[in-house]
Length: 284
Image 1 (cartoon, one colour):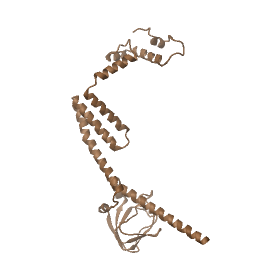
Image 2 (image 1 turned 45 degrees about the vertical axis):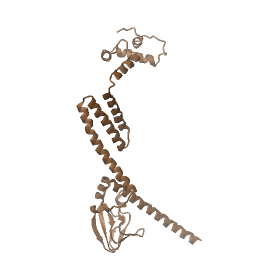
Image 3 (image 1 turned 60 degrees about the vertical axis):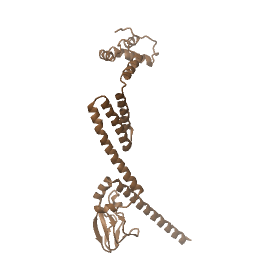
Image 4 (image 1 turned 135 degrees about the vertical axis):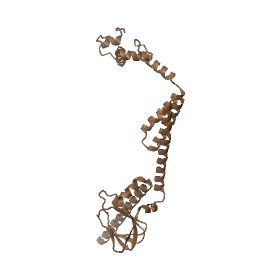
């Protein structure tokens, strides 16, 4: 290989241009000259159809373009589109569009395998299609149930089979403020009183749900039976299982606790307004 090329002279310490006048092009030329002096790289260049003694960027670009054009087939076009969709799945943040893009990518790769007579590729991506379709269907059902729970009826009658019956007589205390909380109650008959805020609870109401959310699982009030009644109970452990398994109940519980907290805030605001009015009247 000729050693008189300007790039090689520069690498060997022979200056061919004034100091400080080297630009990016000359640096890249030097890198190419050094690369072509390597026997392994020269062998690769020969395999690519390039002349190691005459390597230019134009020659490399033209050769790559030639390879690309010569490999444009219907099968490879399907593979390219499939690869685009697979890369797109890496950029998606939500599962539903990710599954859709993955299914489209699998379909294109399966077609690629069929057109290129690659049985392994065809079978692999063909089997991935129903798996992704099943997961997508499950995800859409979860989204539908969650939306229905958020917009529809908030009844939890379906929760009763998971609960156990318990009866209370007038004067019985269900739980006290700051007691350890381990279960939630659904009133069926009778009346119950939350003593701290003097609020009566009738049939069809949940009690003890806020203890499920407190960090130390403690009761936030004292509830006493003021009229013989029956309740259904469910432990927090069972409640936690249902919470994670069924998004409908998860949304219901979120709405329920939000409503309860808003009611408590509204009650406190009314009490504060009443006290301020009473104070104002006394001053007047």
